Length: 173
View (cartoon, rainbow, N blue to C red):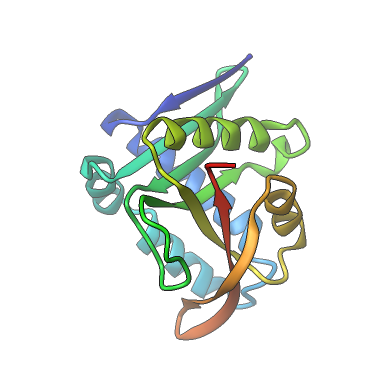
């Protein structure tokens, strides 16, 4: 019923489609100019960019399937730190998205647990992420999974800055 796979080059269009759809679903309520959302999606989720990311040994994509349908994905950047973290062996949970129609089925939790299992096997000490300060559902999810707010990050779309929390989870606890 639920399957999580490590993505490869055959999954490029799956990631592009999921990326665009889930970003629009999760962020267009905060970014009022729909053209800015569309431009961001076309830049962040284009074929060349995703192929490049999939070829990078420091980037891991996971895709979650529910009843054989791709319904979400995660992008983890290995060996990626930020000024807010002094720890060594750090990785970033760059993206974790589930299609709106599948939220509430605990798929995000299942995908997140798989991410943590994978990065622990790789001996990372902590994982961090950024999330919009008004995305209360995401913040609650991360806090329930032992992430702590440690700083702020400005996410820029079309020249407009959106304040985000930097959150970190210690993997050695």
